[in-house]
Image 1 (cartoon, rainbow, N blue to C red):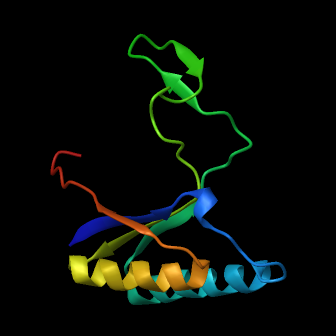
Image 2: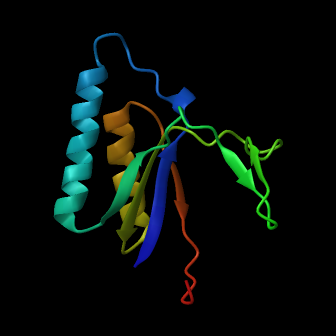
Length: 113
């Protein structure tokens, strides 16, 4: 089985007024279903209140991410699934719950890691 990253950038989530609690409930229900199915690895969002740090090989730490890279924010979930089709199904469930499209990526398997 492969691990899949299902994610969305913060700007994609446009929640109509008064629906935030419903979105939270619906998205948590999908996560609860993933846990019950045994496919959940972890999920959450990055804390935008803590600055991004870029750390060089010599240990030098600089505030900020890669200057030419995209902002990495929003919501993330990692599921371990038997197929890409199963990953698409879970991504669709999260898209419906979060009210926004999800990006789907598969982690490259490295047996040494």
